[in-house]
Image 1 (cartoon, rainbow, N blue to C red):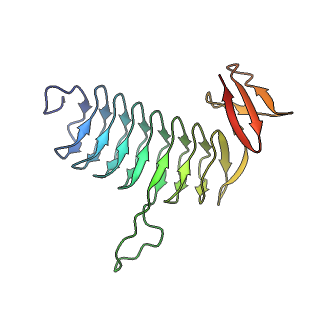
Image 2 (image 1 turned 135 degrees about the horizontal axis):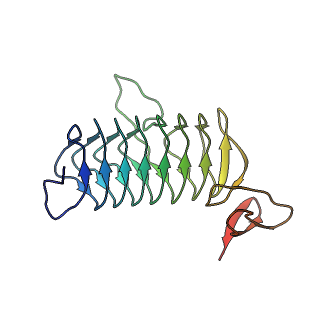
Length: 194
């Protein structure tokens, strides 16, 4: 199916619900039983898997991949080229109660980050550029750029290149053995050398 707005060229499976108005970029694909709520913003060339819900005040950048069974709530921003693994979880209320007024906290996932299958991102935190959150990890604090996060709660246990290869530092500079990208490591901050 093509968008009701013929000026846009995106694919939506016939079982998907798309509440108008919303913004969906060219080349985006929305699969079975997914729901895009009124006001949601989705960039170009995204892949929205089966049974995904994107809320009204969610912002999805270009080239984002959201696998099956993920809910992207109000206050969540996924920058370009973020990967959300199957059944990973975002929260948006740090102290949820059915009877109370909600206190939504924003969550920012920066460019190129990976959120592994069944990982949980507790709201109010920033996931750095190209960070890699392992499957099943629970994020309870901010995550630095290129950080590898593992466990429950997640612990920082290393660094990962933008090509997803593990990085090893013997000093302040290293080179990814897979793609050749160079990095510096100073005061526990990793930066790509361009």
